[in-house]
Image (cartoon, rainbow, N blue to C red; front, side, top):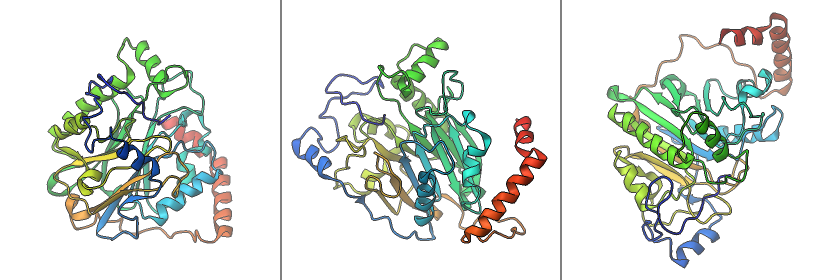
Length: 369
């Protein structure tokens, strides 16, 4: 999963020319390949304390989220988001079928005490009858703090297969901002539980005989056309399982007014490999060209969150996207728990669970759907 398929010539299933020389930076050269293989450090700007005048967006193939609440990776994710002051976190390859987990093991239960305000949207192949709790693929977007107050609506790919998920926000001058997290399938037909095989099976059940990779790109282009026609600012990131510097891919995104923002901000640098075993950047961010970013970069592998992919991040001045005036908070905020004291947290959690069991809150919530 997540490893880029190397194709030497001809057309990929996305319909894009895959000739090696048609890549910005001439990656066919040995120097280019060696530079990537030797690059095991962070790349671009250093991820430092965030300026309050910016919003920080991070996309990361986390190589899966835990299936249980008490797994150490949950704490690693929280610490990463908190320490680096992330406003929006896009997750590729979630690897969880949330419908198959007990309610008390799902994401809201894990994150209810993390932040004062947060909102997460996941997209996954919920209609796969063969799926277990662990299900490869899926995408998510977690909004934290002020981004929750700018939130308008959410959605996912047209085939409901977890290929991408998006959130839309109220921008300045009545122009909306849309952030999309993607996870493209890669060809590995021999593995019955792979993302490619899952999507292939579901598509055939619906009389769609397209290759899942080809379908991914065709459907994404259609959505991008719709979103740009609506006048939205677009910030699209994630794991593309495709060289994000391929000339034909860059040109196709440019048709929708999007460019590879990491290359735009660091034009003299060669983008690093973003999968540990790969030689190409397959994770990245494409953004509307009329948005100016402040900083951007790739983190090192396992920096903050254990994964075989690098996280990619970007800082954008708030004034680029939103009105200077911050969305208003409620008239009064409730008193917060002293979360730094584990005794208080344990006592509160125990009381809350007792109350919810007594009044069958979870069962009532399920019946509301």
